[in-house]
Length: 350
Image 1 (cartoon, one colour):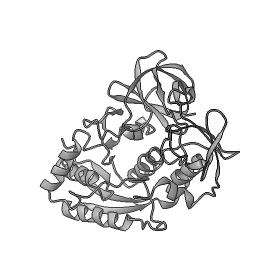
Image 2: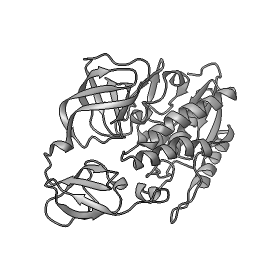
Image 3: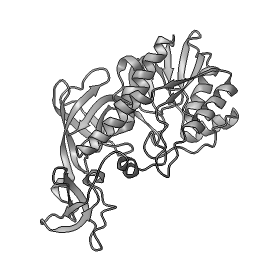
Image 4: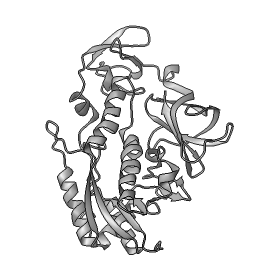
């Protein structure tokens, strides 16, 4: 499977997925360089940033595999392109996805361009996805598939990208790591915001934005409680409202100017259900879908795929019509469109 000893720069995050990716590339005969991308190193109150541990694990893997190892410091660009995007989105009342922006701006743009300048023919990452002729395909492991986070990557960079573990399941990846004696074989997955490990979104945002309490208004216009900042609430959210017993309430909307959160105890409330979805900032990996093409859509990672049609499409906007209405479509999140196993792109929900 060697591609004439081509040079590959593989992103080594210090986790098991990227470690096995690097090992497989070495075994396939590529000239491999491991790269730790330093995107975030700031400690937050009560949450020390684990970047140095991850860096050391990535380095240990590189030593074990006998490959060159470098660190690319993208911290400034990361803050400007990803962290600010997230903070600005929340301040505007949206629920943005920083992982998607990280892939667009850092891993498959900045990392790709820097690696190319240093003589790389390809980049590789430990994402669960597959490529074929510049197309993005779902991973074999449906539970771990990460194409949802990759839909904003360009077809051009995908032509120079390898996803070495896209054909494996997570248990198989751990097995391969153990077989090769990799230090990351049993390392736990990092959860929480992509760049701050265990820190929750609320703790993170509290470092950067001023919030104040405001009213929680139910469907009949009555105030039933107080929230601690409209910025923290998401459409469809049920937990964390602290509005006492009785029926559960769901967030149906919020007004950032008046700092008001609107809720309803009616699960059939029309504000919770959507059949037509408007998108902007669309990215089509190779070419846009045709109107009335039969497609499927995913509105968040691991959400079920639902049948849809494109009813209107222009340069960077589109309107999708779903076969059935679905609950809790959230502005700022992404709707990602598939044609069978091929991820063709998507856009930001407005």
